[in-house]
Image 1 (spheres, one colour):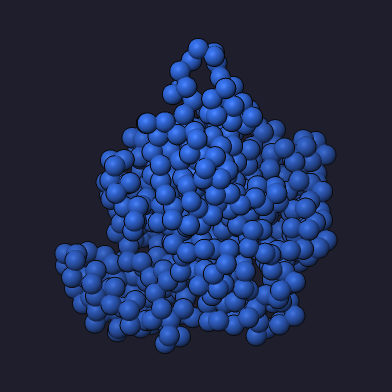
Image 2 (cartoon, one colour):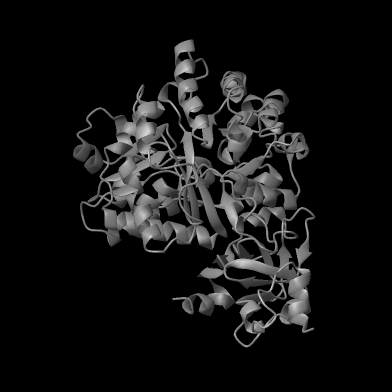
Length: 544
């Protein structure tokens, strides 16, 4: 028996007929001479893998995989580089970020305020007079060497002929004189507008929106940026400043077959007191899971009702209104994710989940709570008993210094990653980008492993720090669980989708402090090259 036939039978690949040509069972692509971190149950590390029809056909040694090759098989020599499953952010506002990515000024990862203002200056030179220059988030003053925010005067000096708007999270924004004039704002001292959150959300909604063509360009560009960082999937939780019409750019990219990131998206109700009616209307012809492997409806959230959003003391009437929405969602078999920040009040949310669970089991629906950085063991046990997952973000990378100053003991266990993992709570890693955080998964992975804030302060202690393989699990198969995809992606195993990233350095052995600088040099989705750099650049050209 030929080696190819024997190996495929061992791997469980059935040949339709012995008379079928061996060529029909051969791989399209083989990656050889690598360090393939599979993130499977055994934490296996392989040397090579074979891909056919968008799925992983087999893994093993380079010699074993070469025996599968035929004259039509593309062989890619990895030169010893590390391969990981394509990363999946379990809570990234990607649809919203993509809309404006081509027209915004990006301060993500910029290390000095002078460089950040330089980007404003460069954008002003590249755009016509009067064009808006918008920094919509993804930065903090603590990332800058100067450790401060920009002033109106600095921004206006960099772009005197353009309206400039710079937003910091949902608490602060600064506008230059042309921007204030364009929006008819007369009461902002030194151009500064401060929260509450609703104020900043409403202010952003007044800014000019990119055209549909710009939104489509931005979607393609943002997905490519994510591919550059080894990302192949996102779970998008809806959120602020995102309405039904805002999904059209994403749908256009999907219709054209240009998706390079898999997107599972949620829908929010937008009108206080009318959320259930809105969600019923939006989902009347949109059942849970509707879509394909690249774009799929994933239920409701992260804001279910406006009255319960960021509300640590909801009234009985508000809780009942919330129950009615989530009970309806459970009856429709919908996944749900809920934004909740504080452990001191999350018991009220979990009690509503308990009430629903008594009527409709929610564990198969894969409901989740987002954020909850201070989750107690008691709350985590309740979540585990209900089958509720936890989407955990790196907000302490940006905000850990404040918690450390306020309560060092609490900071040491925030967030309680290892406690949750050992209790059996499903955890998906992510960023909550891009308004309040960077979308870079390697920044997040470094923070998961060292517990340090952007300023370099040690915040979380080693007792809540996973090892490197488990950190990768959070960003791969852990996140895939939240979109019901952990059986098809999130690890590099035979039969799963061939979504992977070849890294610029060895994630498993390099110094932790260098992990944040990693990039992908080759990203594949469905076994197709969607991003290539350095020695692999020609592979991407060959796919166009």
